Amino acid sequence: MGTTTNDIEEARDWQGILLDCSRCEQREGLTEGRCHLGHACVHDRYARRIDRFFKWNPDLAKSYLEHPYFETRAVAAKHVELFYLPRLVGDPDETVRQSVAQRLPVRSKQFEILRRDPHRDVRVRVAERAEPGDLAAMIGDEDYFVRQIVARRLPPGLLVKMIHDRDPEVRKVVAQRIAPEWLPTLAADTEMPVRLAAVRRMDNKQLRQLVKDPDWRLRYEVASRLEPADLEPMRADPDQAVRELVAQRLNEPQAGGVLPEAC
Image 1 (cartoon, rainbow, N blue to C red):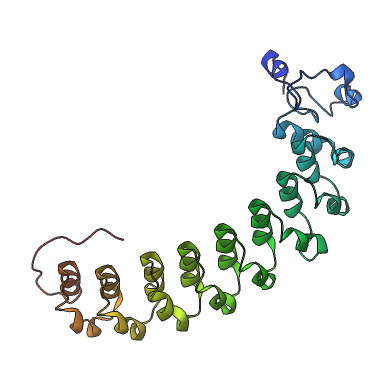
Image 2: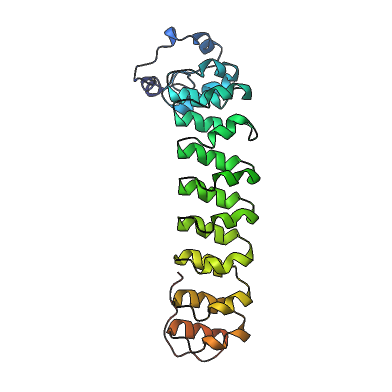
């Protein structure tokens, strides 16, 4: 890849100073094709250029784990041997710790430390990589998105511990995965998206218990899934859209009107 004038003019370090290859400790690499100003440079302010440098020179990454620029440390952490990573668990920048969390062995003591990291993005990486059986310790995480990931990956048998999570998006994920016997509890949730997620997984016996639910949206979903033989109680539903759906499923003449948009 050739170096254009614009590439060189944009080649600045993390403090905004124009880069000068003649003063770089890696200047010999320039003649050996192991770096390229504006394209692959360990001192560039752009992470992709730093990353390209370490891809060309992975053996040099360990020398930059204490560099003052956080992007340099974060990218170096992607390329060093694993045994160098523990020293970065306490790095002051969360970007560096995210990089570490993406590579540390999940059974290591240092990975366990990152489970309690103060920054949610680091804990997100931990939740994405942790062994499913080890996720129970993150059920009470303060961040809803971390708990969402936990709910997606936690063994179904442990999801009952999240059935009353304070965030409806988390409870919705729980409803999509929890054992069937807990679906009636989630069908009584205060939030309709959670209720619908539960109803969509219910068997016919469970659905029959909801034919007189006070919310027409839930009854509409029930009417769409009940076996035709069990639709009789809904033939006289107070909502027209529900009645029309019942009639349609029973192949009966409809009274007119349009079906509602999907909830």
